[in-house]
Length: 462
Image (cartoon, rainbow, N blue to C red; front, side):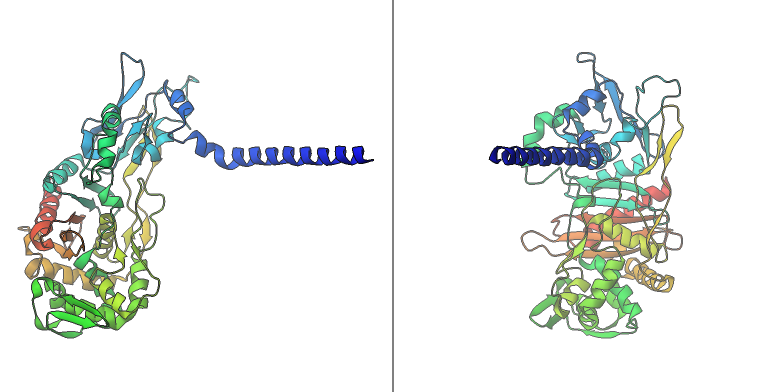
């Protein structure tokens, strides 16, 4: 009897183990198989790619940005980037040692035509090509404008969300042989060249965020508010001074925006409170991940735990518990330029076969409607005044009306960041730009505004 019980117990254990194994295999096959198959570190995947020539990548005008060429010695296809560092944070890299990043990772299946069907019933030997929204001439020009300074430039079409340029510096050479030989130097350097500052760098936006605060003031009927700017805001344990310790005296909101009065905007944020500032910020995309974007991004955020009025005052001037990416600030600027409609940014416009047939096409999509057109028009007027007679006069372009906002964000351990966001032409926006110079130590109006002006002028003149 005892022997029978033991046999039954053993059978039960074996059955449980067998069912567990079957359950695991079913789960793995249904939910994890594709993740493993497409994992860039899966060496079997690399072996499967040896017979396929990876698709090309082009800019919006057909300039070749990435291709695969046959290495005569090894007999395998090697990835070649004609402009090397220039697109390292957008196209990324493909390496059998360190995997794949950015567009090379996101569009791996398309670049290898893994879902493709050969009309001649022959195995597919070449992957699909990508056509980007980027303008190579503008990308190259924007890179030169940074002049080796750490920072980023993002340019969008506010009407469509197309990314026109996206530059981060420092950068790196994504060619596999260079990447693999220099990897330790790249990852160990303090300047973090692998960080795509334009889309993944998080910074206090400084006074550029007064765009959002001005919109909140308009919605809360505070657009006629007047201030006695003493040059220093003091409340509930916080003290904030105007840039350069200037006192502007009696000013209204439009003038406070034009001269970038911290006193006025801290006052507004304190009066409106944390709920108002958090709510309108989230309407503009703060605390919301940018899902299904073509490359990896960080989420701009406000730490919403236990916010008080003092926190709201700091957020209102772009400091405190607020961090944004340059891309996010370009999106906010674009929404104002586009009468309150924020378009979803995108980089890949279409995927085509080697014969030029479109396999996928990507069209403009509305992401959010953060503010009404009337509110957007009000903020547009404020931004125009900044460039016309305020802190952003360095962004002026002869014959073209520019709207913008300067920013100088404090950094406790290093020099201040210099910001500028803007768009043009103000009466028919075609390009919106965000510029940040990391730890530059200069004001946004002095250092970042001229760069934005040049990028805007370059795009509109080409």
